[in-house]
Image (cartoon, rainbow, N blue to C red; front, side, top):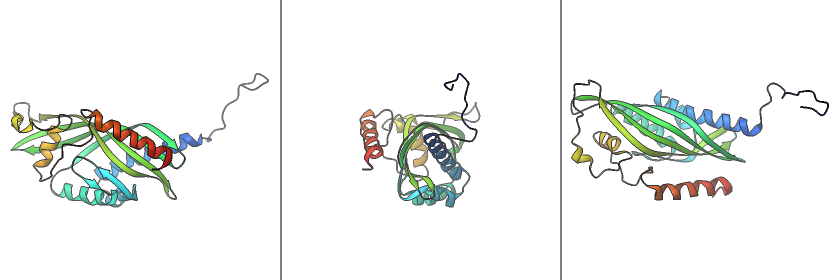
Length: 213
């Protein structure tokens, strides 16, 4: 409201700079997963800065290498769909952090039984402003829990649960299923069942946001 009591409105088309950055970052974060799911490998690689770092249950390397590894994984018969909701985005100059709620959906055949699996997780990225816009400088999965059900309700889940006894509860089904494709999954991935790892991870991300180190 102006000093003379008249109601004023923002000019149409004018967006706060901080909000504009957050919208662009959210779009980049969403499209990175879309490009992977739709097999758009060059676009996926271009979502990242060249010296980026990606870490998931099955991969650790640069964003460009991740695009190639994702192509290889699909050729080996492991293909998933990602649902992602960028939730917390913090911007400081040319650096930003993005944390997103996410689900990974996969349909596979395990020991002759068709199953649906869901990994509930969060995706966390450091994001950097570049001459061609905001791009991901990192990508990390933070795992919460996973589930598995047979697509035919009369089937039994085809897993010997004794084989999962030593695996992390935040991603044990996922780790088991991926291992059947020849991938080795470590026990030190980020997960809600390891708050010690998360504390150090978040602290390092906060330092990077403030100082770039």
